[in-house]
Length: 405
Image (tube, rainbow, N blue to C red; front, side):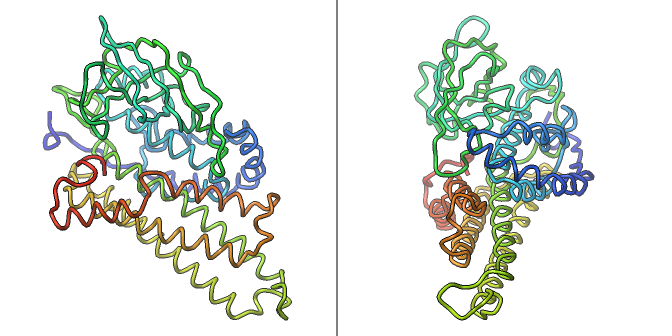
């Protein structure tokens, strides 16, 4: 079986608008629970239950496994709204959706093992890699993976591993082991400035046995089409892994920035500018101009974001792969979105003033969460621009191997 002979079923975005309306209705409750999640350092129970009720952890999982089968653009629209409620919560939604979807690109046996009993959220991390030791019938897995966002919501863990004796590259040639969360330990380690409510703790596996089909090896990576493969044909089966996770992940940061602007606009109508004669901020033409400038920056970030997701969706529905230069250009486009969001949130906090940094003000939590999210390794703009520049100039090898961007 090949891409050319596979009939591709399109995305199913019919529920996107309805989900957004439900999220808007839930916004007061989710915002009320956000400080609770930050103190718990993982999603608050009521918030988690509400998201599960909406099927929010399986939005881009294909319908064959009980997911919503959304496009990357549909998912991005929803993520913007989740982030307006709580950026940390949207990060969990992003990671669980992305990691679970990646697992649906595996073999028939892997997919059946993970999702045969119904939709099952997967979380994971790949670095530093654990160890997989080959034994009869499978592998023994040992590893310690930090930054495992959504660890308390997941049923399965996707851990990067090197097979004993391998000396190959870690990225992108990493094997992925799938382990039941019931057989591994979560170590309470997530103490950071922002995104505190994501449960991004350290996951530890000690001598956990997995059957052979529960390890995706670098010689048959995600997207490999085995002879006679049954569980394939959704448009999401043809999305590129790294660009998809990267682009949809920016949606939540954009949504958080847009909500920060909403808070600033509301304050502008009632609060003065201290040390000036302005009784309210809307009396200041400078303040009004900056509101317009920030809004325009975020509008442009939104245009670039949905162009980036649109490129992914259009290629997937016809089974077309990005060329290496297209992938580099896509990464650079996402780097531009990162810079726009960063510029906007800094300008917002200057308008909001020093009182906005008080811990009882929600805007400071959004600001901290956005700053941490922007610095995920996939979002570092300088790396994105260098990769694009090198591919444009045909300088080989690039700083990241093909497939890693």
